[in-house]
Image (cartoon, rainbow, N blue to C red):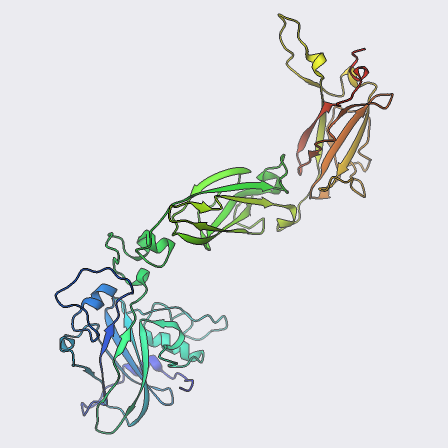
Amino acid sequence: MRRSTVCGLLACASLLAGCQETPSYSVRWRVADRPGIDAAPTPEPQDEVMTNPIACSRNGVSLVELAIFDSLGEFVDFIDRPCFPEAFRNGRAAINGNVLSPGDYTAIMWGTRASGATWGTCLPDDDVTDDFDGLCDGVNGLSFIAEALRQNFELCEDGVCPGGLLTCECKSFSVRADRTTRIPDFTLDAPPDCEDGIDSDGDGLVDQLDPGCQVADLESTPVLTPELLLSLSVLSGNPNANCGSIRVGRLGLTIDGEALDPIDCNVGRTRFSFPLAAGPHTFGVVGLAAPQNVEAATVEKTIEFTVSQSGVATPREFEVDFRDIDLVEPLEAVGSFTYGFELPDELLEVPEGEDPPTQTFVDCNDPLLDDKTLSIRALGPSGVALDPPLLTMGGQALDASCSAAAVITETVRWGTYLIEVEATNEDGDVCWTNAGSPEALIPSEAVAVLLDPAEDAPASCFGLE
């Protein structure tokens, strides 16, 4: 079948009339039941030639429409009838068409909803600007076909209707003068279960009001509601960081591309549930920029998971980390930290009858630190000292005399910055250190670096001699 052009396709339908001479063609059709439909037996079971209206009512097909095109692809005839004409109670009866000139033709037949709209999927075309743009989905079949032809789709290829028109079949036939050609019977597939306007599974809910349609394409789909667990971290698992550290206020969630209600962004575990069908699914999460919580502040992270028939999701926990490289805009900020020194157990011993101390650490104002020298190193994610080194806001090296004031770094493009601190006495003995667990900085906020007494620190470090 050659590709066709459209010229006044919709307008032509209203002009078709003529003398009722010998009809050039006749047609009969049936609507196929949806595979696997569980329907009660009837006195007149559906047969191959549709002798009762059960298939129409069971599948939500209201009208059947037929368009005829000549060998040049020009629209030449149109008829419409109820899905089940009374004449079909006679298994041999057919519906007559109009009078056509002898020649070769293509017949396209489709079913409609009660509204007269068709079933189908619009053809994508970003460059479409004419009047048919966007009219193909959910409107009349002629508009649908017109859009398909405008995009150079075949009228009929191997029985497939043009451009994704559903509940439809097409056939070729020839007309001879003064004779009626019986077109081979059409079989229209049942329309999509979740778009047919019918309560297919008998639960009182129709189409998208039925949970089965919300999770899949069948009303009868078993709906499960597994508990899902989002485990969120930021900045490569930085234990001191939270969502505010990366300027994210809420999280946008999707399952299989369908948006869920956004949730507040919190580091740690957040439980939620969503109705799903058993089988594979895709979970997506994106950080939304505070304070408007509309624009994406991070890339979207996706995780494939499966829901079993028991309603258990695998994996049960979605581990997501928004790293610095996942941010849409680079994060530039200062870092800040203070330090404190844990007292050894010997200094915390309390004589019987006395209250325990309210504070177990001291800062640089304590006399214990008068003779101590601080060594401060900024490390990268691999635990290696940064090169070039991280400087203070004033451009000085981090190594400095002990101070109770917070140390503020220069503005940096954020990644992973770890602070390692040691305090040594005049003999070079290490008295306090956090070398085993350096503290992670966070953007624009101060963290407290608490130093444990060094394992082999001499008693003189703490004035115990």
